[in-house]
Image (spheres, rainbow, N blue to C red):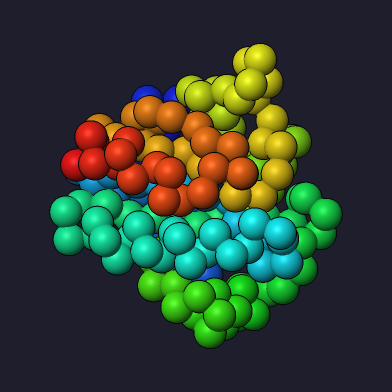
Length: 163
């Protein structure tokens, strides 16, 4: 990872199975990055995220799920439990990563980058809750940030414009 990446491609993350993944693997794709949790009121959005992935993957689209336990301790499981939950309950086949922090001193560097490039309401960078979404273009640049309440199907038009 470079010291000051200028796109998401300069970052790595650990997959659920413990492998280091370079986000350069998603070069030239449109990507939706989401901090997720298994015990959240927004957890049913996994279904919509999977539907987006199924609908657009062949056209160069990926969803990247980053479990986070910082909001109401709603992601208590380990990687195996998270993966099993997502597959069993929502048929998730998009890439899922190991649990990270998205706020604070231990925030994953990718999330520091995302928040810097696309702050939330009133310029506040902090992630407010699970299922905050960042849409990234084919050049690895953050295009838009969506609130947790934004359902995946509401993002279809924005994805279509980037594909």
